Length: 115
Image (cartoon, rainbow, N blue to C red; front, side, top):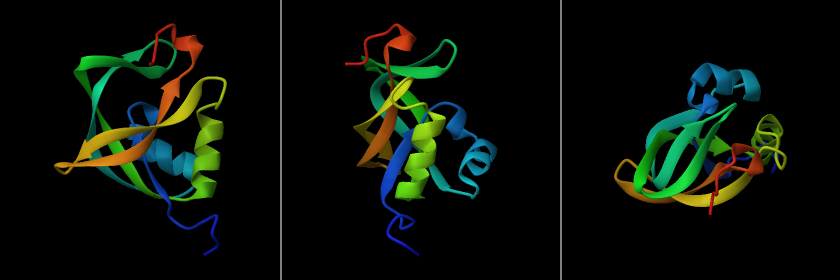
């Protein structure tokens, strides 16, 4: 296993990547995923799913683990970074613990403020 393939970071997903078949099709392999919550954000949908900061809201999703640098390169392309989304760090709750993870935040296309 090369450094580029070694597991690195966690990713919180809340849209199409919640579906195991979608993840497997995009990454070419199965990825471990567990339920997680993103407090302080509300999920919406226009053409694509998005989240927006909302103090009283919580967004349910999945926390993906075992992702490599190569996986993030593929996912960044799938999410059309930086056109549609930017990858940012957040804190999510999974299995009763708070952990740091990446999340794809919408750019201006969503017509909402994300910060």
